[in-house]
Amino acid sequence: MSDNPSFVLKGVLDVEIQQKPIPEIDPNEVLVQVKKTGICGSDVHFLVHGRIGDFVVEKPMVLGHEAAGVVSKVGSRVTNVKVGDRVAMEPGATCRKCEACKEGRYQLCPDVIFAATPPTDGTLARYYRLPSDLAYPLPPNLSLEDGAMMEPLSVAVHAVSNLGALRSNQSVAVFGCGPVGLLCMAVAKALGASRVIAVDIVPSRLEFAKAYAATDIFLPPPMEKDESRVEFSMRNAQAMKEKLGIADRGPQAIDLVLDASGAEVSIQTGIRIVKSGGTYVQVGMGNPNVNIDMFVVICKELVIKGSFRYGVSSFFTLGSIA
Image (cartoon, rainbow, N blue to C red; front, side, top):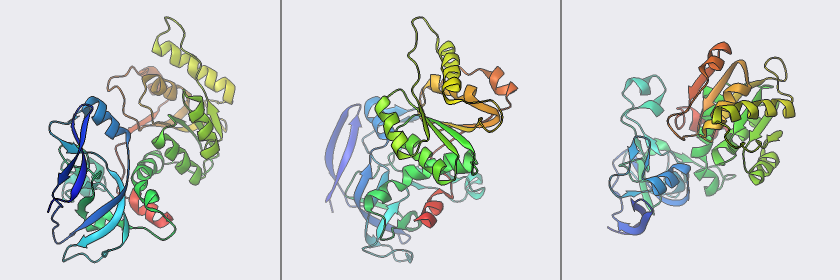
């Protein structure tokens, strides 16, 4: 049956609404009528560039992976949800058998089927099928819009808690005040961070961040003529330290830096302002080749981690919070 209007990316800056068949489900799957889907930065990258790193759109693909909806059909073996339930939808189905899955790092599963990651269709459609255990019932106090935001929020939980290992009364700096950066700030605040510094080049974004979750904000100075990115990052870091009273050690030091922008200068600045022995987590995807001062990394004994999607406990954590 073809009553499944879907938002299809046909090529760079080429999209259209197409009718697709309503998916058939297996015994352990559910069919969800999608009610809300967020637009992620990855959707924009695929739309504008046709790729994100090694993920290349080679044939038409439905966009979207931040979604929530209402269960319209359940498989014969499904017991955790029923028709009519409002659910948040986890977009990545893993093999559950590989080394990464068994180690509890299923975001690294080589065979993961992830919505709107080539060649898999996403959730910007009327109907979407998924394993039943990836459909999380929403409590009455959460809206379907809240449910759609569970995926990007789980990305922030993974970056700040699982990888950043943030503890109460520690200080955090977040570069980039887009949705993921803001959610990282919110998670840091919820985990008891004593200081949450927001950094961005857009004043209005900083104002929103301050009202939302940040305790401090920093607007970098403009780049000077003929100044290299490395030189600018050094000057930027010094200006940030002076304005916000950031030290390399002690109570005024920054324990954790997260970059949600992917910008080279932000990355360079971040490793300069995090404390000696501190942790730096890269969340945002930008240019794959960046210039990093390894002398700083080595002499400060920094722990540098990449953050990919979300971890195995992220959705469970959010479920318990809800």
